[in-house]
Image 1 (cartoon, rainbow, N blue to C red):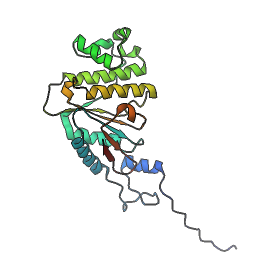
Image 2 (cartoon, one colour; image 1 turned 30 degrees about the vertical axis):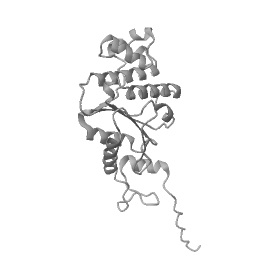
Image 3 (cartoon, rainbow, N blue to C red; image 1 turned 30 degrees about the horizontal axis):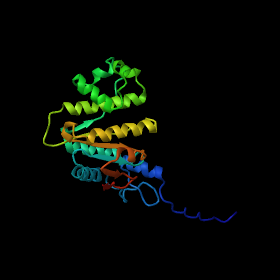
Length: 236
């Protein structure tokens, strides 16, 4: 009979990024070896999101842009929801266009004709033939620009308030090719910073896993949201 052997203890390894991502998404605590545990708490997502939303709100001024970047599952959407809870009715979300909507592009913007044409031109939709096309006849890039124009049109219809309106865009330009994404980012930069947009009373918070839009968007506040850790913020 062969002698019994004692198995060697497995070498400790740091948790993988995938495991950290899963822990962050579901607020699961981890031990240093990556095992689930009730004794070692992960960063309290709800608390850091609330505190980060307060810091972001205080730092971001009217006419400015905040750019949230970090890997998928790191907590960008959680931070946006915390910011929405904090701001209440002073928040507007970007909406995707309904492909079943039969209305032509010019009618999607509930603005006077001259204002609608000017806003579409700023969004890169100045081509005359596009004005009569419904959403399902637009390309993906054109629909993204049209959704941006609709968001800015909704903001323009809001009564002027003493406090600014904050626009939230999750997964910003994530489905677009990078040339189109950069074009949309530059359009947003001009639209948010121009004094003619509701007197410069708009703020924008855009979140995406892509970090290649920094130059085009030129944000005033950069928020990095790492896996399983509180965000880090930088201002210009």
